[in-house]
Structure formats: structure tokens, C-alpha cells
Image (tube, rainbow, N blue to C red; front, side, top):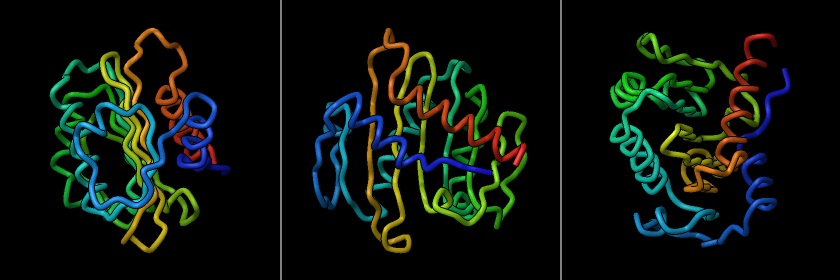
Length: 185
């Protein structure tokens, strides 16, 4: 199995498609920065990462139309346990929710949620939320740099519905490829 790093892919796409704004090390990110800047890179502690993930998850819940997919990587599936109810609700309103991670815990079953078991490798050190639907395209990707204390983040947001190959769409396709590889590998 040759799983691809979502962070590596995202950073490459950001460099090709736009000029990412590097905010450096930040203690927090405002909702305005998140909404206004198309592509940003920064390092931040976990609470900021959780806040940005919550913004994405809430936006998906508010735009319920069952046309989109959510891809979420938690490093280890047990990291999903504190937010499992939110992800079950996301599965209620989405076409499909895919949850990636090292299988050290089994989330509750849901007809629209599928877990993708990752081997303990580079990909399992990444945390990401990708929402790809007809009315919302966003990707937030992090890499564990310091053992679940500090993360490096790249955020890509596409508001251009007429762009056939936005960075978010390409990242969603990469997640689909990783799903296929995990099944056949």
C-alpha cells in the first residue's frame, strides 16, 4: 500500500495554485482570517486546531444537502472519541463521511460513515478535515510535529464553484485514492 501524505499533497497544491500566506507561529486564528484568506500556513497549538475543525464541521452541518463528502483524519481513531457524536451528525447530513486513522478504537456504526484504517506511518501522523460538496469546499490539514502538542497547518478554501479542479477537489480525490488503496492493499 502506498498511501499519500495529505499534508505533502496540500502544500504542493498550494504552491502550484496560489501563494499561501505564511502566518508563522500563532496562538490563535480568527474566524475572519479563516474566512477571508484562501490559503494559509501556520504553526499552532491543539486548541486552535480544534477550533478550526469545529468551524468546518459546523459549516457542513448548516449546509445540509446530502450532496457532499467529508474526509477526516485523526491519526488514531481513538482521537475521534471526544467528537464522535458530531461526526455521527455529519454522517446524518452528508452523502458519506470517511474517517482515517490507526485502528485503536472502533467508532459506532453509521450507514453513511466508513472508517479507513491506516498503518502507523507518516499518514497516520496527520490530522485533516476536508469537506467537498456542491456548496462548501474547504481543507484543513496538519502534521504532528511535536507529539500531539504543536501542529503545522495548511488551510485551503475555495469559493469558486466554477473551478473544475480546486485544491480541495484534488485533495478529496487523493483521499478517495487512499480509501481505494487501503481496501486493495
